[in-house]
Image (cartoon, rainbow, N blue to C red; front, side, top):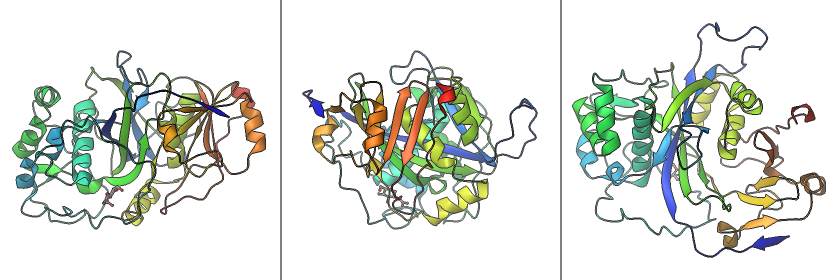
Length: 375
Ligand SMILES: *[C@@H]1O[C@H](CO)[C@@H](O)[C@H](O)[C@H]1NC(C)=O
């Protein structure tokens, strides 16, 4: 196996995404009778990115975006007071386990000044909540008067304020307006309803010019809130169960990038909304894994290797390089035993192979290997 060299370290943009999982009890009217109803009692919000976006055009994604200086402004302190504040804003103690690989040079971080007043964990949650508002019009806020501590059950999004469009336009123009909106509604972002879920680094590829270091949060909602796509970055949306999202991907109705596909398959482990919610509460204080997939280019496809896979190398060379082999994907698969990988056969056919044990009390996807009939 050889690696192809490319000079110049990437500039990492820090970002947050939010997986909104809503309990789903509505009668199925739109589903054609040929399709069995989904087993999971919850649906995930997937936003369709505009075909004109530079990053992942046309893809279906979870709401999210890049961290802004406004997300960690000291001005938030006043809004969170008196019930919540440093050091942990009621989020609980930080988990001790942290993966060492890879460590990233956070170059090009123009916000490294005294505006960095909030702990990162809080700032990333504010970012995720702000992006859910900007892209989908969903307001994950909590009245400032509510008692401190975690809410007893799954959350509920706030009714959109009168003048939603004007507020959103202001926030999109200048993210500092999000704090003003929260103050106006006498609410704080509901940072306690967001659970640490996963973290992904954009793998190196020859085409990816922008690379993100993205924290994924999961938020359970008692019912699906109304969604108002911004019609700029986001042109459409759907609420799909994990199995429906998988099916739409395989049948080419939607396109998912490998990390989103992985997360959808991971969420297919949960049979019901309450299972998922209990699971999130149960592992709230566990650590988080941040993954840098390494792309192995084969003679006829691609494999995204994840930590734990026998071919995965914790070598910082692969921050900026691909692996490649003359062999075909099938040969690579026959030779191996210890898998944690996403096999990319083509744009709409991924297989996930997992034989490793999950860490930090998390779940990994079950093997999901699509039959050849889809080829
Ligand atoms: C979430 O994960 C981050 C990164 O590992 C950690 O710093 C933070 O303390 C975690 N938050 C909670 C509430 O567990």
